[in-house]
Amino acid sequence: MVEVDDRAGCGADVMAIVAAVEAVLAAEEAGECEVGVVLLDEHEMRAINREHRGKDEPTDVLAFPIDEDEGLAGVTRMLGDVVVCVPVLEAQAVDGGVTPGAELLDLVVHGTLHLLGHDHETDRGEMLARQDELVAGLAPIPYPAD
Image (cartoon, rainbow, N blue to C red; front, side, top):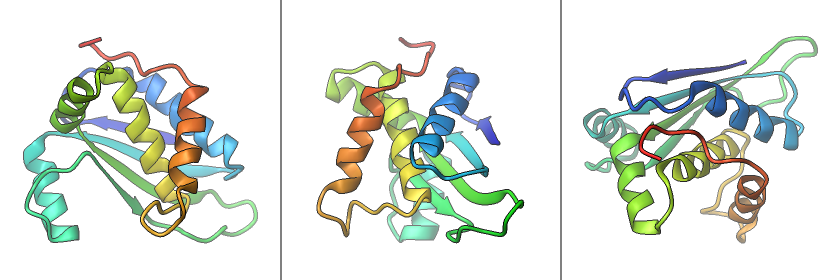
C-alpha cells in the first residue's frame, strides 16, 4: 500500500506516484509493503534536513526507512517514507532540462530504492544505475506544470 500526502499542494498525479512506487517495489521483489510519499514545501524540508542530517537547507529527497528487515510471513512490511521537496524538484527540472513530472519520478524512484536499502554513497554506482534503469521503463508523473 502506498499513501501520498501532497502538503505542498503541487497537484501531481497521486495515482501515478503510487504506480511508480509500486513498480519499484515489484521490480525489486520487495513483497507486500507500506510506503508513504510526502510532497513538501522548502520550509518543511529545510527543517527536516536540519533535524535529521544537520544541514540547514532544503534538499530534493529524503528517505526514512522504518523496517529494514524482511518482516514476518503474512505481515505487511512497514517500509518507510519518501519525502520530496517540490520547489527543489521544480528548480532541478529546469536546471536539468526535464519536466517537473520526470524529475518527480526520478526522486520517487530514488527515495524508494533508499527505503529498500540501496545506498549510492557507499556502493560503486549500482543504485544510480538501477534507478536509471527503472526510470527508463516508467512514464513521467503527470504534473500540472508539465
